[in-house]
Image 1: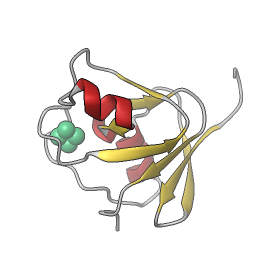
Image 2: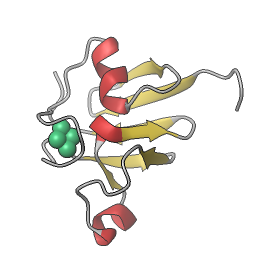
Image 3: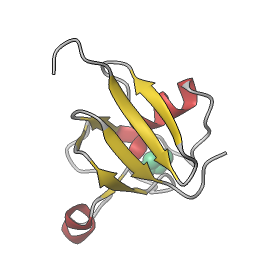
Image 4: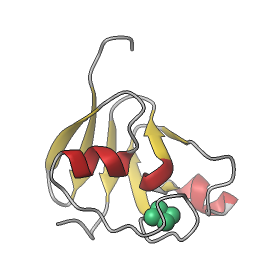
Length: 95
Ligand code: FES
């Protein structure tokens, strides 16, 4: 995956944005002019919770505020989620 630009596709908005290395999904959206719902930005308040439709992410903190069931269902916290390749995120609260 080295050198390949990673992209974030936001649904239902239908925007596709680049993600810079080390950028969280929330930061990438913001850099692309899309404001996703957020508050704490450190993975605890869950204001930003969104569902990963395609792709994989890892969270940059060890214990993001998600249950094991939520993680298994594809819920992620974009403020601390880093993409492992192209991802598609479902986040109804985006402007
Ligand atoms: S903004 Fe608080 S968990 Fe993401």
